[in-house]
Amino acid sequence: MDRVAIDLHIHSILSPCGEEEMTPNNIVNMALIKELDFIAVTDHNTAKNLPAVMAVAKELGGGICILPGIEVTTKEEAHILAYLPTLEAAMELDQIIYEHLPEVMNEKELFGPQYVMDEHDNIIGEVDKLLISATDIGVDRLWDLVTALGGILVPAHIDRKSYSLIASLGFIPLELNIKTCEVSKKETFDNVLKNFRFFKDYQFIHGSDAHQLEDMAEREYFLELPDMQRQTLIRYLG
Image (cartoon, rainbow, N blue to C red; front, side):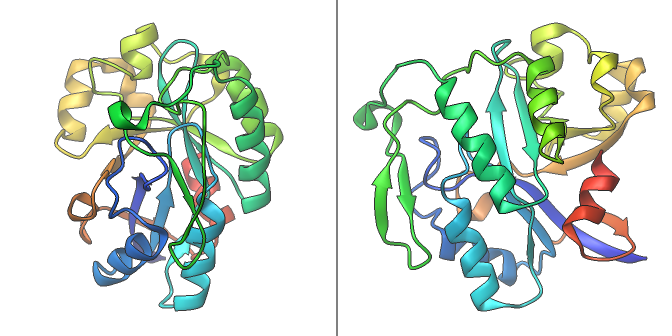
């Protein structure tokens, strides 16, 4: 078994709340500096910077693996991390999510830019719709969409009093067959278990939810995995 250092919740400049330093090259290079093994760039309701991030990681080498992901805001206003086995699956989900966002346009002076970049950190486009809006996709429908693409769901920062599945519903629907929940980096697993006894049936991971480079995890969160394949990580999480 390998002891694998992870950070599976990182935002790029494409998220309106992401700082301008969060470019594909900066993210991957910072992950290399911090000696992370697996990272996931999980922008709000979009995967459009994943092609660049994955191209940079392939070009730089260094053994870092990218797990394709999106942080989806469901109609319940819960943040759910969707992890996919391939870039193609992530881009397919990206297209579905965009169609289910409301027709609310981003005001970058107010919320920040939503830049799409290439592997050289050139801006090649912008996303027009406000990506921090809630979709009209319920969590049960999101489960169906993601699992049909070979992916899994991990409820994000379930300890928070807003934008978490627990804050929205008060529970995790059993029919979703969720195995893993993410806990905010400042919270402990023990406290979560103490406050919510039903979480004893779940496993936990920490994510940095980084919006700036300095907030990305150090080599501090680990999983024990038999290999460094994306599908192995997805099986572990789901």
